[in-house]
Length: 116
Length: 113
Figure 1 (cartoon, rainbow over the protein chains, first blue to last red):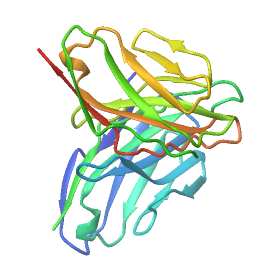
Figure 2: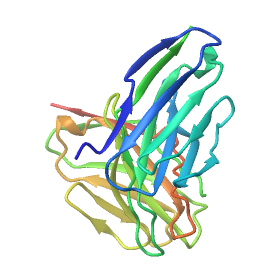
Figure 3: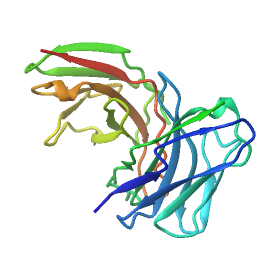
């Protein structure tokens, strides 16, 4: 049981290049999330998904696109990378929470992205 | 979701209890208090959550004041491996909630030998 995995672990891009970050989970979770974390800051939600084929915007969605074609995968795309997107990107997944219950989010190890 | 206030940093001696405070004076009746921690460079890890009763699990205890305007996370016997950033998060639970977490800057706990 690998939990939440992220690919790649590190990447350096030039301004204007594109790339896709892959998040995979093997826990059959419905919900998946992409966060970014800048130095000395807390995590900020970029996009999230409550099920296969559905996505929604978080706090800081500009410059990113996402897709959830399969339940176990959540892809984060940067179409034209900018230096302001230099950050650590974390993916997370969870079951839906009930009215009186809470299902924790499980986080991946992160992808460290530098845009020059 | 209610805003939280935490001290930016705290120290604790190894083996002693670590008490991390969180202020959430604008919390509403249906909002829970959640704690996550982030050990250096890793993804955050869930610790505990509660609504109004005190809660305890294998990792920590959560004490919520009677008026629910503040809470304290207690690590009963802190070890060096508990050195991390601790995030207090307040939000609504329930099936209509999408599970989004809003992280502040948290408290950096340094456990010293």
